[in-house]
Image (tube, rainbow, N blue to C red; front, side):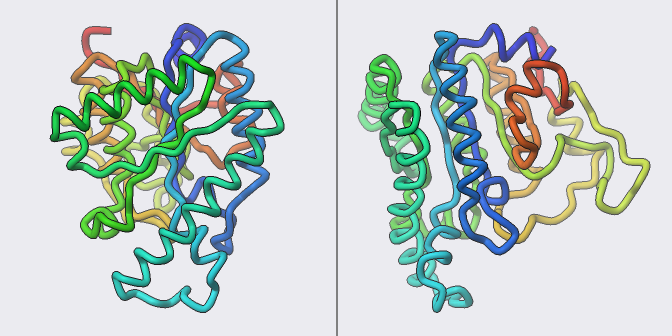
Length: 265
């Protein structure tokens, strides 16, 4: 079913989590980014349009300014994001340049989605970029949004962007294969849930677990994102972005993931 959705969807939003984007030492995984650009190029050659929602500004900042690694003051966190966003976008520019694809940066806050004029401008910019073959790369504007640094909810940002753009599919890349009935890191008999049609019930019945080292969102934010897009009839896939060529493997049914399917589907 996931393979069919990927093949039939024309407008796809892909969210990249910090743990997917980073190596074990916290530096940017440029090999992953190159493979991502290869996969996106393949999708675009099939006539699809792609929007990327990417975390990673802070880890990129840490990689650049090593002496601030342990600084927890909010001003240092914001400064790291300001530095890291430049590095992050340059890394995206370099990998997509190999396919002669331009990227466009969009830094947003939650307020942007509550103001009608701003929302209209975001929508118009998204449509203009993708219509011209440019890949928008969206991130939270962490340098001005203190609450977002504490919450780290780019999963919700991806869901809001998908709804605003009227996407056909939202794909969340994380460092897990999908949603399990219990924590797979603790229980060996944990089972992958391949299709979910009731995210609300799922939240009430599964073990949530903790967030990981570099990412600030957990499984809850991913299920909440599914609720948001499913409400508007958009399916969502939660997949392991750490696996090489995961998009291609999902299309070829060589890997499994969790599909959040609207009840009307």
